[in-house]
Amino acid sequence: MCRGHVRWALLPPVPLLSEANVPGTKVTNCVIPEFAHRGDASAASWLESVAPFDTITVVRGTLTLSGRAVGSCTLLRELGSVYQSENGLIHRDITLILFARGRWSDALQIVEAFGPGRYNKKQQVSLAHILVDNYRKALRYVRRQREMEFNPFIRSDFHLKIWGDFMQLQARCIMDGLNDGIGFLTRILHPSLGIAFTTVVIVGDYLPTGPLVALDFNAVTSDQRIILLIAEVPLDSFTPNATRTTASLHKLGTTVPVTNDYRRRWDTLPIERFSLGGSRCHVCTGSPQKRPRTKGKRDYSISRSRVSMNPKKMAVPLWKEQLKRIEGLNDIRRSLNLRGLNRSRRRFLG
Image 1 (cartoon, rainbow, N blue to C red):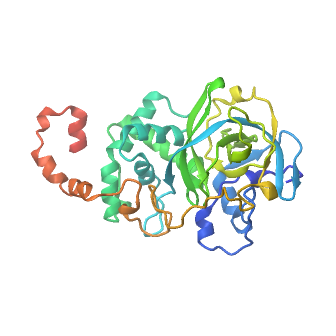
Image 2: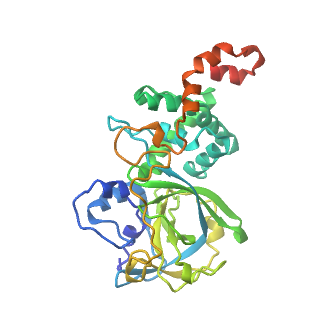
Image 3: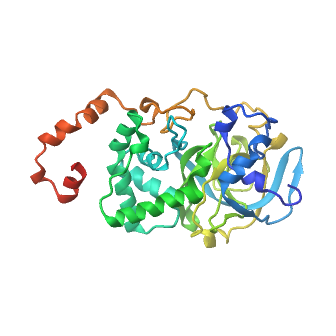
C-alpha cells in the first residue's frame, strides 16, 4: 500500500464468505480483507483504478492517505444480500422487488440507489411501477419455491425496455458486491454543496454506533462511476460540522458505484489526510464502543444464510393476515367490479 496500491482498502466486506469458514489467514484490520477473500471482493467491487491524491503511509497497521470528505452518511434501513434460491441460483429481479417492499416511496429509493444517475424521472417512475406491481407476486413465488418460473408483470413496451436495461446494469456493475455482502440503504448529504443522494453501502458484521462520513479516495469504475468509502468516527473525537480528526477511523464498508454527477461539486472541497484501521482504530482494537452484529439476526429483507428463503425471515414478514390476503386473491378478483377500475388497475388484476 505504501507504493500506492490502495485497491485493497476500497474493497467491500464479504461477511457471508467469512461465515462460510473459508480457509485462510484471519485479519483483524478493517482496512484489508482477509487474504482468502480478496480475489472475490476485488471482482465484486468493479474497481477500475484507485489513484492516490498524495503519499501513503502505514504505521502499525494504520493506513493514512489523502481524500475528500464528501458528506455525512445516514443508514436508512438494512436491505440484506442478493436472494439465492434453494438450487443455488441468484435472482436479482426478485431481490430488488423485495427490497422495495411494495411501497411507492421505497421503490423510488431503490431505483435511485441501484440506477445511479442513469435514468430520468419518467424512467425512474416506470421502474418503480414494476417493483411495486410485482411485490405480492414475488412473495408467492418465493413461498412456493418456484423462483425459476417468476416473470414480472410489465405494463407496457416502454416499461419492458427500461426494465431490461435496469437488470443488465445490475449484472454488469452494481449488485455483485451484495452476493457476499450485506447492503444498507444510505443517504449521503452535504447541505452547503447541495449534495444529497441515496445509495447502498456494503457492510460486514459490525453495527456502527458513532457518526459516519463518506470519503472519496478517487476510486472509479470502468464507466467512471465513483466508489466511496464509509467510515465511522469515534464518538470521543467527533465534532459536528467538522471533517478533520486526528483519530483513526473505522472502515464500515464501501458503496456500490454511485453517479459522478456531483463530482464537480465535491472536487472543490479541500484534500485532507485520513487515518484508517490499525492499532489506533477504536473498533479493530476491541474498544467498548464496538458492537458486533448478532449472528442470528434476520430482520432484513434477504436471509444471509445460503439456504432456501423462508418468507418469515424477511424485513416485512408474511403475517397471517398477509398470507390470508395472498391465498384469497382469487376470491378478491371474483368479487371486484372491474368496470369501476381504471385501465391500469384492470391490467394489473387481469
